[in-house]
Length: 62
Image 1 (cartoon, rainbow, N blue to C red):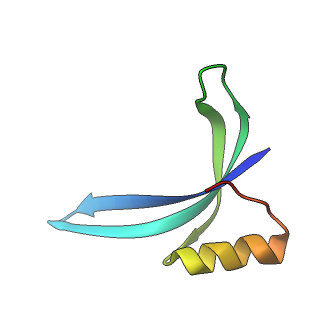
Image 2: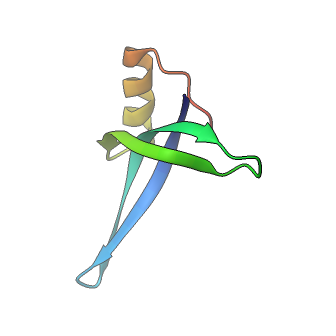
């Protein structure tokens, strides 16, 4: 499994809101694309996402 913390932006109603997601991917293709992803946790700040990874014992990639 490959774990990442990613910043996501949502657009709607003339506004933009950003959040962070802790995501799990099954594998990486030969050309480096991460596939079969699933969101484990959605947080408002990157620090909260890092705290979640620490509590769950997840080693993530930057």
